Image (cartoon, rainbow, N blue to C red; front, side, top):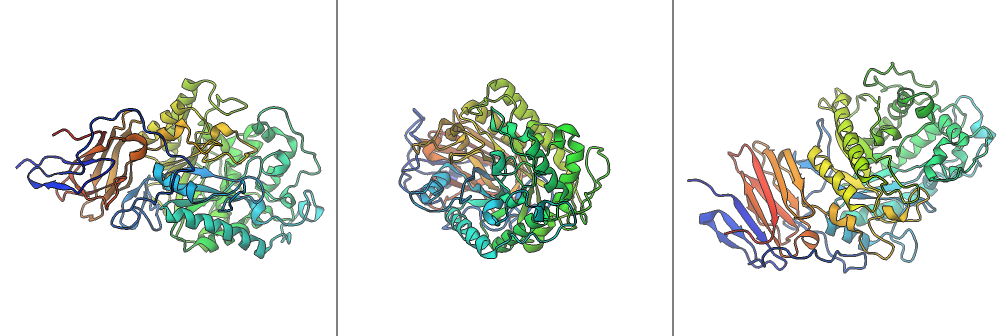
Length: 565
């Protein structure tokens, strides 16, 4: 007998399911026809809504792994896709947490709205200055004199623990809404002395050169002499204050604190690594220093793409940032970033690091942007550059294969966007789907960002979602019981397509998130071939599918409106 495709119809007020076994079709709610005008987007002040569940549990939970190959996987071996946003507060107290009335307040309204849009990860900023503020001033000779590194005596365990306790509040809050946290040690232009954020004052060594604020976009601060000197002392670790050693010491404490937290997906050791040598000496030179910082001299390995052999600066620690993190938390992932120029598609020469749990962590931004808002000044050129950059980074990934990750590390786009242009965001999201890669958008809200603008925020100052939110709230597979082959979603029509090869013998289910409040005001229809649609646990935002034992390929479609009969 020919088996017809499974279908399920979800409406805004689902009735009890009517099971028609002869047709192998499950219909939920009578439906109300084709979609009309787009629904009104929820906002920050909308009533709280619990995260959707399957059988009373989160659709994806627990520690994720990166055993080798392009995908993150869970304990059942399912491929996991993460869609989310960045949340970074760059002023004191350098973190967000529930604190009503404060500009850094982040509460259940944020988390609930994220879950409603389908986001299941937040790249959450932590800042070195908040973790280890110290007491010494910049350019202190007891720290900034060149020589063999030693303890600068700036670390305070109580200060760090108090900071991490507030981070934990946010991680727990996000976890209640089934949202993972990627802890991101954020910096821009090294420190506040250069109108950015990141390093505490005591870790700023400029050889006495004063900081000069050039007119124009904030990113011009990267070109100043003082910032270049401060970065150089950090990357070469050539002052007695042991800048890298203290940075690693902080990471050791962060990893130890969160090592048993199931809602921490991993750690991003250093946001957008930069050095003036990227401009003056080329990527190969700085990427060698960056690999030494990440790996330490004990694990440094070889560069990629034919770059010269790596020779680490003499005082770089033997155990770099990544092995330090893994020594204190061997279970979670480490999301290593290439240099800052990689976000524009330039080559990167970071090579394999023979350590487990690594994720190739890339940013994608275009060069054709307004110096005021950051919005694209040439949309087609921006979209083309973003697409080319994403392709180039995808080609890097297999070159990072090691004995610990034979297929290369998994990969993830932890920043893109920073724009109020739905067209640019939509173009990138479509490219990401074609590359079968997850992402987190920059950014959730505008927190008086010294290195950004209000146009970058997904949530406007009045609490309303921008039009870009409708593009980013997608039907997508949160978990796939197999290997994905193709994925697409149209924000205009709500049409979704997924094809995957089922994992033989797996009893795990595939789970789709469906943004009913954003794209399907009149419900939607699910059609599956090679899998059967399983009851969604009492929520219309999640669809569960079970692979058929003999299927070699599963295809799934979601369309707006009622199923055709």
